[in-house]
Image (cartoon, rainbow, N blue to C red):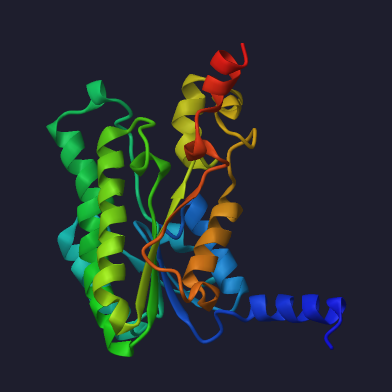
Length: 268
């Protein structure tokens, strides 16, 4: 019979080694969330291949290899795919994390911003992922995790970004359904607000904005990058071997319901 102490020790060891021998490709590896994902995967034994827009963003001791490309540049995407397959081989796990938005409301949209945000957050992501995913089918196994957003589930602004992320959710389900028999799993993590550099422009306008956010979230706070990274690691791992086609919010309860309605209307 295994004691509680032995069980906990074994669980910690297995957690540290769960990605041993696995090659993991992470896009947006130098960002706030990307950095947390890279560190966690490396700590658990993965050989992590980072991708970002600049070599400076890939200056991490957790990265075994790095590739620079721009999701808005088709030629650089194609070159990065070829370099990854040549230098690092077919990945076992692909984590599509890169994304960006600035058009926060409908009045902020114009044709250029619509095109840029759709190209970056949907078209570019699919162009990068598709060849790697098809290469992964030759191995007979693999896990793909997309970082989407709560904006793809309900409207919290950023309409072009939200539309792109909703497309990512649909794309992941297509992979799950069509390539499951090839041994691939595809899942989505939809974070709520995370305190990263992406919030700096909002904080510059309103230093109190993070405090205002708290009343919207049932947990009374926003999530941190490590909490989202844990969800990504779970879905990427063999612990989630029966999970595919799932869209998982990691949002401190934001999409579960409207807390201000409870407080301001029903609690009045």
